[in-house]
Amino acid sequence: MSGRRMTRLLAQEWRLFSANRANLLVLGVLGLLLGFTVVNGVVRVTETRAAQREAIAATTDSWLQARARYVELEQGTRERQTFDDPSRADLVVMHARITIAMPPTPLASLSVGPAREGNDLITFGVGSRHSASPPSRENPAIRLDGPLDAAFVVAWLLPLVLIVLAYDSLSRDREQQITPVLASQGTSLGTIMFARLAVCFLAVLGVVGTIATAGVLASWEGPFLQLLPDLLSWLLALAAAIAFWLALAGLINAHARNSATAGVTLLATWILSAVLLPVVSSQVLSQDGPAPQRLDSVIGRRALDSDLTERATEVTEAYYAENPLRRPRRGAFNEYERYFVESYYSRQIIIDRMFTPAARRIEERRVEQAQRLRIAAMFSPALAMKVLTDDFAGYAPERRQRFEGAADRFQTEWRNFFDVKFAARIPLTLWDYDAAPRFAYEDEPPRDRVSRAAWPLLGTVLATLLAAFAAYVRLRRARP
Image (cartoon, rainbow, N blue to C red; front, side, top):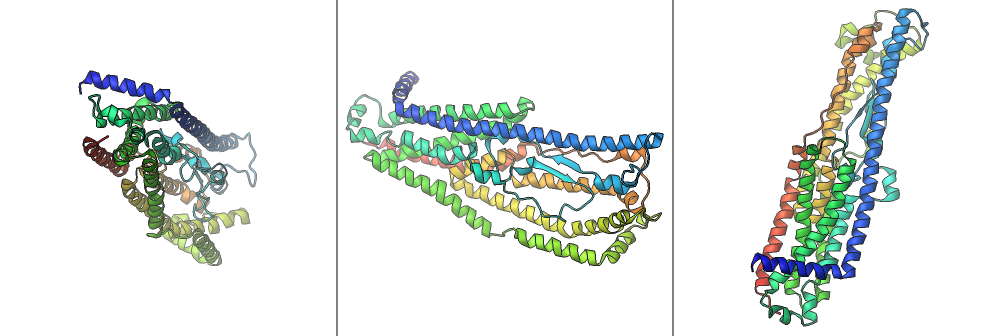
């Protein structure tokens, strides 16, 4: 068929598609639902950025205020008080809370992710991050409003919309005995079927792609070129997922003699691919090397803390023995200073040494499970879109592991800077305020997110090509 005839055929099928009010209604509902989730995502990302700026600004202001009090003390315009002495390391460093933030990714508005509480902030000081109960990684707000985000709509609801639009592309014509007329017009049934599915593909991709892209552009504050790798990769995966379900609809319509059979077959395929496979994969992966129970780790921390408290003198002496410069150069001002300098701080060091390796193993286990889930997503386009969207939205365990590692390194750097002055009770100087470590986090490059998308994207593309080839072969032999 010539390009001109194909263009006329596509234009004709587009008029028929748009003349069907049911099609427009389905697309409208899809657009409204997706738009609602994207707007919520943009609001969520905007609030996250505002909370991060506010928290970091509060950390900076608190440190600058302490420095200003020290300058006033040195200039003699401020009196030295027992619990407000900016020259005492135990008071200044013990009360200091450093807040660091993991910034949202360009596609953060498309997914709520598994943990959106805390606005991706980590606040710490000289104390152990493992001594208290860790915050829940599941936000109760998600239980209230449900996991209704763009990732949910695209992964689970979009295939149903495609099934509704394409399940009777050829089977209904057979029911109404129109296919003999179509076949007698000099255009093969396969070409007609291709034109119908192409029109559906362009309509759905246009609606979903436009709304999602608008949300991404509205929520992103960085240079436009920085979001292109993520956005183009996600749109490619979206196009492949849409093409898969339409190719599958073409294959089933090539066999089916009535629309009911085609619809039920497509729905059964959706249940198998989008419901059963993801559930089974999740269950299998969660049983393969499960993470330690939260209750066990909380009890373990409490037990260790109690044991170290009972052996406070032994712990303190071991801490001083590691570095003789830590030994106090003067007596304690009060019991408060004695407790925090000689007992509390050394205990926090030991707790971190005990639990940091365990926490890292848990993060590594999450990474391994995520990698296996991406391989499993090769066999389910719906699961692939969910995994891809979550990863591009910044919820990959690898990214969290990178951020946690940067936080651990900075806390170690912060402790090392003040360690001797804190433990030996050496007065702070203005240089200590000005030369204190500053946190500088470099987020993962876009190529890391794109490379993680390789397996799910490859599986979706291969499934699409296989379904399209099978449909092509079948439609070539199809009879009215």
